[in-house]
Length: 95
Image 1: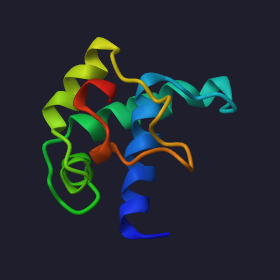
Image 2: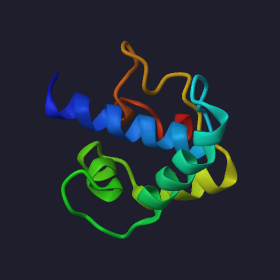
Image 3: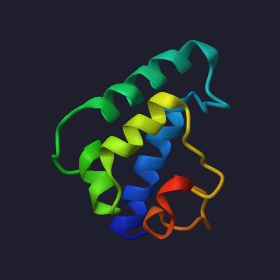
Image 4: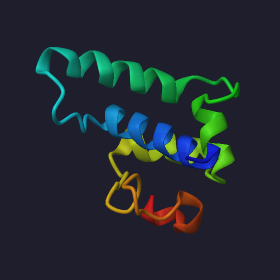
């Protein structure tokens, strides 16, 4: 797995968690995981493997992602699966 693949996996999982896509997770853990993911996305840090770092490494605008997350307009149909396109190959509207 390359560093880029790792960043894609981190960002995908965090956004899925923040959206509440937590199938297979015990109900009593779901709220805690969703809250932690939402907090990670909202932090202003640009340290390695922070939300901002991950988004920028992939050529994505962190603020745009945050706005889409807040509005519920994030689609994972082409993002995050093993054979999915990298986000930088996707049009901004698809993400």
